[in-house]
Image: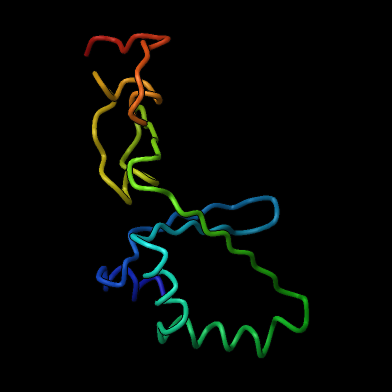
Amino acid sequence: MLQELYRNKELGFLDAAFFMSARGPVQIQYWRSFDQLEQYARSGELHLSAWRDFNQKAAKSGGVGFFHETYLVEAGRYECMYVNMPVYGLAKAGQHVPAVGKRETARRRLGGENAPAVPTPDA
């Protein structure tokens, strides 16, 4: 499914990240909109086939589980900062811009005003 999504950006999929947790593997996906996520979940050929297969073979046994959470984020109402990191997570899914000047603090990145608690070192 991920190969299909990466090849077909018009579906609304932006990126995915993978982690191992104490309970097993975790995948986080970033989508352009909930409508596009829902459209793919309900009609994406590979996803629908896998969903049906899971429900028929594994869901009833209780031996395999999964969870999914959906967060709707209003445009311009999120912020993230990366220092000495590759473009990753929300920055990879959205737009990566330097956190300097009006973007130097979390409050400023969200449209407010305040002074930095620790000034950014000169480059």
